[in-house]
Image (cartoon, rainbow, N blue to C red; front, top):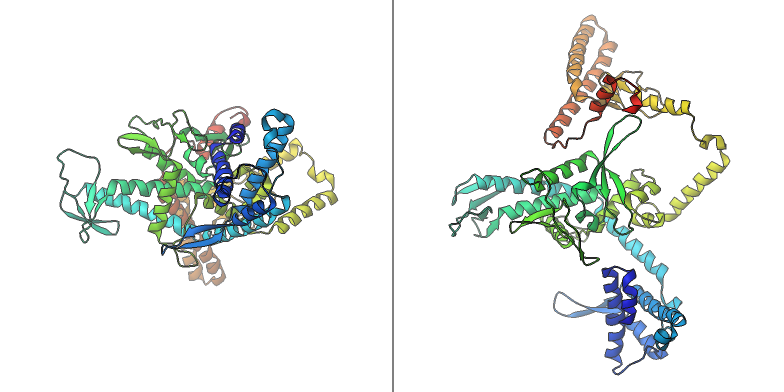
Length: 545
């Protein structure tokens, strides 16, 4: 107990609990059970060897009610904790002999007893296999939680408009609006299954479906930890103005968690839709996000009230959704999705699996490992590389060594700081990409591959406000094709038909984008074109705006 009290100020609550379990349950209790009356930390070689052999296995219950002995995956962690316990006592005995001297005895765990590298390799292989199994089904899981959210909302809406005791069909199910025996009004909507008579709380089902969808989307688009997810607040949404163009970039501020370092993540369109839906849901009648006080299960303290995003109404009171609640929502969503693994059993997802899948997918699609390290908030890039399940470590190290050697062989002039003229040329490239139909997405220092035939170019980003121009181009192409066919210009007609197909494709893209924006919630963040228009109409140096 003195040892645990001495270690307590430097570790969090969960680490303290794990250390106590290793020392008391896995070590000393086992010795007392096998050697009653033992009262010294100085263990004879036979007793120490017997304990190290027993710690390698554990007994678990089988589904049939029996017992089975299996290997303990955390055996090396327990051995390291016991070895650290003995070595700490020996070190402290030199500093304070009166207090710790009587407990300083030889350590029963040698360094060779701990196969840490082998354990790390096995854990890495197991986590890689787990990630590779879950990466392909991530789109199916996202589609499942989104479909369940929409169906649950449709059932709740249909039930509200249906009189008590009548049937209604919504979300692919036919239910009966339940008659409540209580005469008092309630905000909850209940329904019954006509076949089984089971009563269902549609309000709770819709709430669970929404928050399961929100948790899955935020976790898979950001790769943040579960604790960081529960600590996201309205204050986490910040903006950054690019000094060159004045464009506002929405950012998500992730509060310090494991490494005590705050980091910023760029909010993509998909994540922006999710966060806007969450903010719209939790806002009060006055438009503000309610303040709730969350309990930190790691530190065992209450945080001051904050406008947390993941909060729900329970018993007429706004309460934060704890980490255990997020796990329950994910388990319910996975059970409803019906996704199975390679063994045919239901596939389980831990919240940390989304972090590993995010890292693997990011590196697979070309994100540099050091950028992934910053996004994930790791102190060491080797930790980031341990999360990926795509490339072997040798390939990454070999590639980084190749880059280092190439930089040494190349002239140092290529790695100098650019001059003002070169920097202006770089910024001017992006200013010259503006065309009549939108913006050109070609890379810097590259020429136009379509000789400025933008209607055929896949790099053209269409401005929705220029849809009428596309319609004019399409009508003109129809007229030119008719003229070419009338005059017998077969080659000209074939080329115009290619341009017509490209124009129709661009119009379809504009319509699809408009449909998605119609469902979005406006957060009041100015668009890039609004900023550009203000810059052009305001006199003075554009860089000042």
